[in-house]
Image (cartoon, rainbow, N blue to C red; front, side):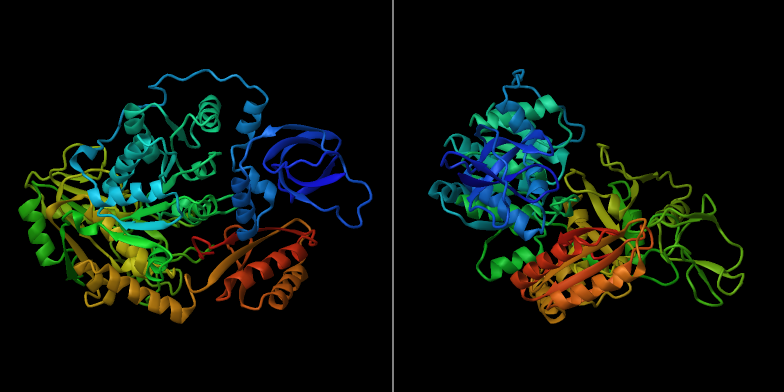
Length: 625
């Protein structure tokens, strides 16, 4: 008898089955017995007979090979790195579609125009050209058939997509198979629309597709008819027989972090898949992550700097006045250029926060202690974290004082102020609509609602209350603030101006932003992260403990003691999530391999606790509880 580890697409580790022939079944789909019924699974590897087990079930039937051996190795790496069961990893791989096709599921042939939808928002790629030298380097690297990761610092998001299109077109003529990954469905759809009109050997993969559409795409991939696969993060698991190139746009996007187990990061997994399969990987962004830039500095990635291939608007830093919303220079610019279109943004929604003049306390949510947003038009206070709403109090809940005043600048307050400034001057103050085609007048938007990938034509822009971004308790706050500025600057003409109002115009970060000194910024950021022990100089693991009905407080103490015994690095917590009632531990260590193994051993012990369930996230996007 011969023994094989089989993965079943459930929250299970691999199970061992036997077969009476000595075959290389790695990557084959098989039917195996599980709890008195037959289920499908994938053979992960051949193994030895497990010790201590007398009866081992037999593989019932072999359905056929579906995954290449290198792809199986890639899935095994994900399971190990992200501390996830192999069955959970298998569920991300279009397993159901692959098995349906293997069983002879009939697929209706799609027309060339299938899935091509009209653009709702203008997408003026004809106004952009990618750098010939950059395209040539990627194409030549692909032809060489060797693994290497390129990090390309692009001037904007449109350039990223145009680069993808130009490279894909070149490789289609070479009959190479290219995987293009974009952070959002609309971005993937745009790429597909353009490339499918150029060549029909292009397929799409994203979560909004119908079952029949997905089956068609997977069938084309398995039969090697698809030469360009375009999709969002789960397209990374396309069952391609031989990949020639992987390109990931907006490599720093938080959308690339999966929310369900395995909580993988698409960027990091793309690099590993390229390494295992021996094909180049191209990461692009107009604000590369600090981790990726570090990898370029140490020679792990090759950096191509195309940022200055296009001209960018000027950035001016102004001190935020204490008695008014707008700096005099900003106000003058608004009055001079309102007919050309000016965008005014602030990170806060509502009107403002409310503070008591007598005790100095800001009104906070009683449930989660988060500052509540004052909505003047509705006369309410709202907590955006836990959705608690209350009427605006007449007295301070802390000291019963009557002198309550607004602090901070929300969108309602900005709109009110602008209407006062332009009263009687026939100037329209409008809420930003990125689907509009004309941008005359003054437009207002909350900063977080402004998304990349839109073509607008503002003469200028204003970011108010910029210090809000720096107050966010996140070790990537500076990086994210810089990225937000660049995202907004893309909505402004090349000859325009972006004003940033801040209480601290002399800050180091703003000096880097004003001069667009990326290397200076990354070196500054890396120095501080190394001193404080944050990535890329350490690994973080977030462990979320969810109590069950029979949960006992002593279980939490036992879990803490187990973690502190097992983990040689730092153990922070437990910290209670006030909204969900869960408990969170943060594990941190500069020895990345060691903490991963220690965490794996700890989770094995925690499986014995019957009054809790737990989730684990390696390299968490957010440490916020």
